[in-house]
Image (cartoon, rainbow, N blue to C red; front, side):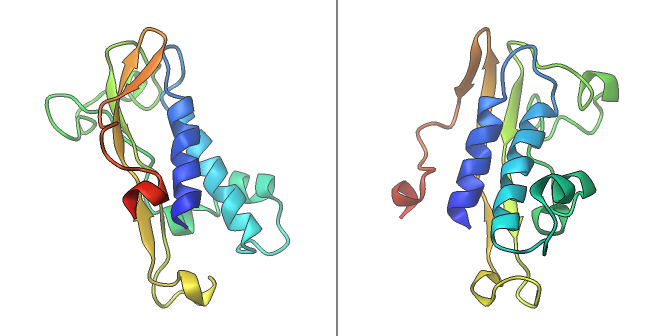
Amino acid sequence: VYDAVYEAQSAGIAAVKPGAKYRDFHHAAQRVLTEHLAAWGLFGDRSVDEAYELGLFRRWTLAGTGHMIGLDVHDCAKARTELYVEGTLAAGMVLTVEPGLYFQADDLTVPEEFRGIGVRIEDDFLVTEDGNENLSAGLPRAADEVE
């Protein structure tokens, strides 16, 4: 589960760059999580594309993949939609990339070994002129680093 979230975060990070739509990093991360959930058999015989289009992954993701950071940790509450979730990333913006998977302890639709597990990996990024800079790069992220 941790490795799936790590892979999803890596896909989201790759989408953070100037000129990208704000939601691109969210879609990139959620797509990877959907692929893992499908591989684990959680969508039955539905394809990854169908499961993603229907938003079936949301049962286990529970939240978005990040938010802007500014004067407050969550600067999104008063942001105008056209400049935020429907906006475009530009150099100087700071945001989190923090996908997660959460399996409830009593969720009989998931393998028993997944029940009660919740994983979220969060890092903060500065959008730069040519991509992004991980402002929390000094922290461990990969499973072996965390262990």
